[in-house]
Structures are given as structure tokens and as C-alpha cells.
Length: 384
Image (cartoon, rainbow, N blue to C red):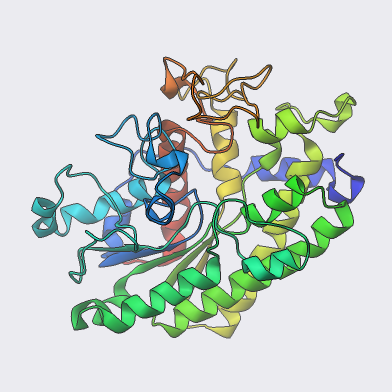
């Protein structure tokens, strides 16, 4: 399916994303100043720490080479840790009593479906994200002839889990909700991924965006109803830079690519989603003036890696290639993906941004988390 001018924003608008990139800071512990008691995460494979593999133990994310940087595969769609792990790391210095329960002593946010998860108030929170999950219910997508090929779970399921958790957890955790951080997303990317996979037209794709945004908005309203007082709502990545899309969409026109050799139309589509989401966040701020609601700019966080790839230690010749995969220019093929028998893994994952063509390496997630932490901290209005 070729991209369309419907997706294309002006070049000046697109470049504007890169002019406001904060400088990388090493003060990754700045969120300690917020004094969060816990983190509660909704989302998809960018944040799942083990829910999908409990639902489907045969998922490739349950096996090496996924999690190769860790003691064992944990369900994370990477070679190691995710952004939420780096974001959540700060809380352990605040609650050292929780550490003995962690055999690996890593900043894991427990997956909701993990039977070993902890319910102690103040010991970190719960992760409801599911890899492959969509913002819209699977039934709603099926009515549009879009099938979720990974999981039956969606954002509505995760919200039901969250409601059940808060209705059954200790009184301490209920009291601490107002002192917790809620991450509503990233979510919605899979709605578009599956729609692209099922060859939806550009008109159908664009019509899908407001529905996805409405589902995210409803989720924010629900977590506020549960008592959330600080909420981060992340946007979408520049998908036109990802090997999965670069290998499937190969426009012959050089004008279809930007200066980073990413597909303009796809990135413009992601920007369209993000602009509508930002508008929605602004509306929610007015509707709930006593709640701190922050847009999480994953788009700029990712592009900051692209802009600074060499200085950050990435191989500039491999920034659009998957570390784990096989194929031509982008080392990605839908027919033989990471985890399949005989699919090789690069010897130096830390020099790659993309892990498997769809998800990022631990090092890329770490740099994104550092960017995001320093971007959202002043907006969360925590006391210094």
C-alpha cells in the first residue's frame, strides 16, 4: 500500500519537531523529587513487562534472544529493559524495603498477570500493558475488517484489570493512588499497524485516528476517576523510521524520504495522531484543572536519538537496521522475524537503535527514557 499526500504535513511543520529537542541530561533521578509511591502503566509492547507471555506462553517474547541482557526472558519486547524500567528505577532508593523481594534487584514493574506480583502499597505499582494491545476493542476493529493478530486484549481490558486491582489491593495502595504516576500509553500504534497490515486505504486510516484518540481520552478520564492526580499520556513514534515500515513501504520517489531517510508520509501520519492527542490533552487539562496531565513526546524523544546517534554511540550505518533479524537493506523480513529458528542476532546490540525491526534496543530505550524524564519533570509540577 502506497502512502498518500493525505498523510503529508508541510516540511516546515515536520522540521519543527526537531528544533525543540532538549539537550540530553544525566539527571535521570530527578523524578525522585516527585515522591511517587507507585507507577501504574497502561499500554502495549513498548511497556509490557510480562502480561502477553502469561496469556500466550508460546509468544516469541517468552524466549531468547528476547531478554538476552537479563537473567531470563521476561516478556519484554527488547534485548533488555524498557523505558518504563528506567523511568521506574528511581523509586527503589525511596523504598529499599522492597528490594529483598527482587531476586535480580532490577527495577521491574510487575506485570498484572504475573502470579508473583506484589500488592504491598508503596512498593512500585503494577503494569497492565500487553504487547500487541490496541486502543480500540478487538470487536470494534473486527467491524472494520481489522484483526488483532497478537492478543485479544485492548485498552478497555487493561482498565478493567486496573479497576479490579484497586478494588482488591490493600488500603495503603488505595490511599497512595493520589501520590502515584499513571502512564496511559503509548497505545494506539497497533491499531494503525494492523490497519496497515490489512491494506486499509489512506482515507480509512485517517478516519481511524479520532476513534483511537477518543479511546485514549476515555482511558484518562477513567484513571482520574480511580484517583489519579498525575498522568502522562505518550504519543506515537515516527513510524516511518522503523525497519518494519521501511522494508514494506519502499517508495521509488526520493522525495518520499526526509533528510533522515525516513518515509515522510508515515511520519506525517504519526504526527497527525500526535497533534490530535495533544489537543485532547489540553482539553482534559481544562476539564480537570486539579489533575496534572502531561503529553509524553515519544516522537521527539526518538528523533533525538537519530539526531545524536553518533555521539550516543550508535553505528550510523545501522540506525535503520534491526539487530535481530534477516533481510536486505533493513535486516527485517515479515517471513522470518527475530526469535525464529536461524535468525541471527548482531554481536553489538548497543550500537543499534532497532532491536527486531519493530521494537528498540535497551540502549535506545534508556536514552529515550532520559530524554522523556527531563522533558516531563517540570510539567509534572513536583516540588524541588
